[in-house]
Image 1 (cartoon, rainbow, N blue to C red):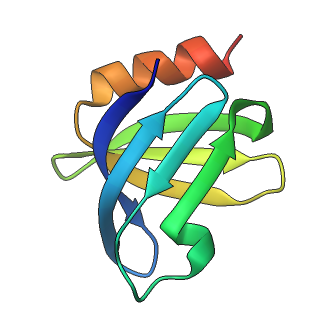
Image 2 (image 1 turned 180 degrees about the vertical axis):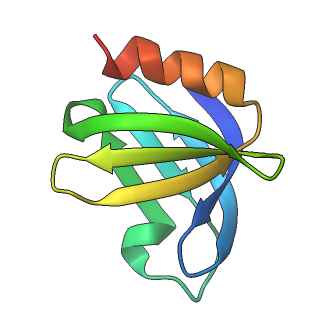
Length: 93
């Protein structure tokens, strides 16, 4: 079952979009035309996620997702409790 979260990618500014949490991984999607195609539809398979963390910056929940290839993506996610719970269930298995 897929879950949807309003989210923004923190890279070269704040890029509004959404995160889809599926059975195989999470996908960040944005409709911005000025970003690279890789970031427009960024797929992160659970098996490729090395670690993740959550911290609060000002009053925003910021998630860092660290991939096995060393890439680090930071997201502001709304409804952080449910998102964090889903990441723990899927990644920390």
